[in-house]
Length: 286
Image (spheres, helix red, strand yellow):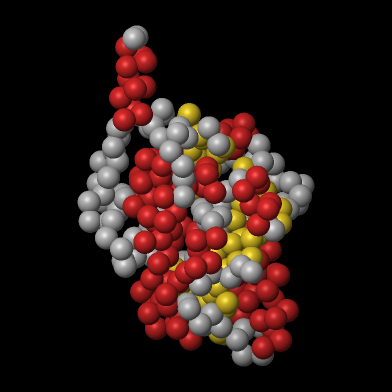
């Protein structure tokens, strides 16, 4: 056995674990369910923790996520190549948000694939349909907002809560009572995200960025939004029906259409993802 083969063998048997996250009946249930859905024997071939976006590429395909910084200290700095995808997906439970970014990208490498989603009735946009891009949510948010505009406007006084300050979000204020929850408030439209405890229970419609899966706020936000029509939006959304069990009505995420373009966009730090590298995907609960 060569030294290189020995190193690959060590990576295949390496363990990523977060003690205290396995007990049932906690907010970790969602993450554990998603991780458990990845079969053994699927290995990571490449990955990149990029400036704005990150990817994990495995035997089954490629998944992406928005790169989130901050949180706890980074612990797992080993080479993830050659490790089981299911093990790398454990990083989604890390309080180091950079590690969690790779964990969510690993989950997307398994779940956000045409061959899994098409039989579930998922709709995919034409790669040529590109309407601008936001680094945290992709361009799916504009289409999701537009799709729901008629029914929101018809209600007359609907309460709409948007988690994340997306482009054009202010337009919603023209036909609904709008609250934008934002961790880093940009303007007078934004409410600090701890406000979720006050406004989300009264929401009729909730649009939640997939980044909340990375920073671990998703379980609580979904619980607070249980009375709302809830849409999770952006490339970081893990396209799994497990989220429907948490009250999500629609997943407005993406699939990797061109891995080579995606690699370049991530490595370049400012490359365009939507239009060719990724295409929008919409999966609705039955």
